[in-house]
Image 1 (cartoon, rainbow, N blue to C red):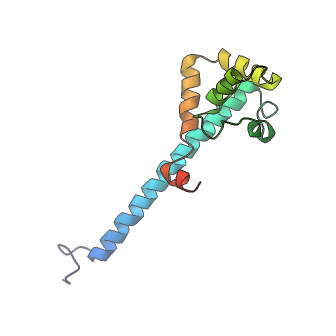
Image 2 (image 1 turned 180 degrees about the vertical axis):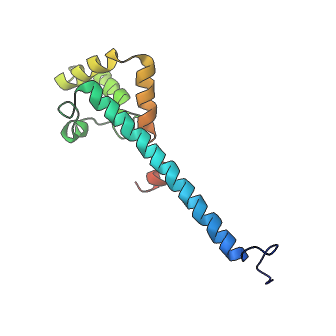
Image 3 (image 1 turned 135 degrees about the horizontal axis):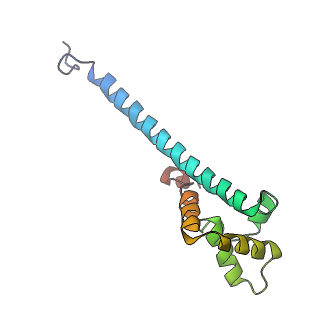
Length: 124
């Protein structure tokens, strides 16, 4: 048995590598789950609003607080509260979101908060 082996098992360096691989694998799975939750929030929002006609990249670019707000629902509510005359599309989305129960809105908000992990935030 070499000095790197523990109790007749694989060399310590292989054990460390295996642990590192499992850790990174677990981190990847966790990240994928977060992305799945975010995507579910998007799908639920699109389903509630009737599709991409209401929410598209052009519309999202008009929302100044979209990057600093937890989710689209709260970004739109915040935007409408600050606007003297909210956009017709914003008013329509508020009506749609108001039809969803508080629990439903909270669930969508929680899903959409999963998008950016600490590692992804470091990239910005």
